[in-house]
Length: 377
Ligand SMILES: *Cc1c(COP(=O)(O)O)cnc(C)c1O
Image (cartoon, rainbow, N blue to C red; front, side, top):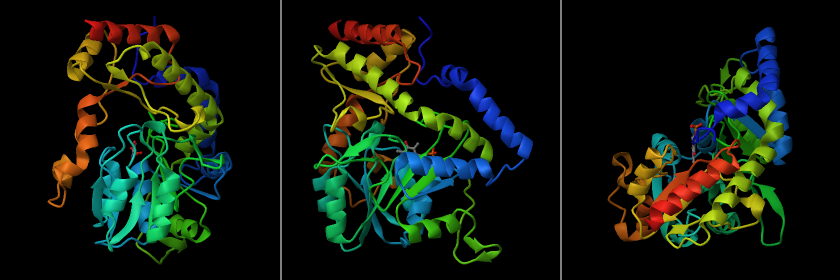
């Protein structure tokens, strides 16, 4: 058995080496390192893949969220509602722009933002909702869009973990995660489902005017060379990263399919184990692209299990160990512990297992039997 890794970037690179090397070599030969043809090509390819009118590449996923909020014209003091159980980047950019983050609880089943909690948090100052499609599965976008419409709010999808996932409407129609709200933001950090070999990100929208605004913001607020109409940032995807992404995008569906298959093998092994809750699916197989495969452990010691796995050379992770509303940077006296019962419990229960495109059946078998033996003591 090969050594088990949380994410196997080297193994994946070995399978696409020639394509990636050729694509990078082309950038080196043309020396178009910033805003070169590779970036434009990737933008067009991703627009087509997602079925969205505009993709605006940028430097990373955190910038993508920030720029989306700048593009929508959110102003200091505006309240922005987001999930308590997510990576800090989501709330960080809200705070950085001097908007007011309003953290709310998540669902017990899919770990995504809870609709009732959003409703209870809406005030006259609320301007936007930021659902995070956590671990690769879409939040309840239909309900979120209805709420947003009723209260005249923007919706910014944090799609850093769910690129390629299909969201299914009640009427059966499917669209790609990140293309439903006013704007979507994603990350191409190496370990994400579509990762480059450094930092990268992108913003998606079907709104022509917003796309135009955002294209200026990513490039110093310039719409015409050396005319700065708005305060912008420098956030560009570099051409070498675009070259890697161009080589990998045609494989994204295959990559997601191998994650989904690995998840099924995990599920099957844990089926009869009462102490282990396997990931909930709120749609068809293609609705959850398993950026993480995350279990909940009941009636057994999660931290002892994590330690045991590490001793058996099985990497694992706890995403996320502390609710955002308890993080020093984001504590706020408006919060009431009773409003975060799910997140407060999840941080104690969750454990994420190795998940990547190169996982092999014997590795999964070793991981699951090690966990089951530990639990059955
Ligand atoms: C990774 C991630 C981000 C940030 O992306 P970077 O490219 O690392 O800046 C934002 N939100 C979520 C949910 C993420 O997982």
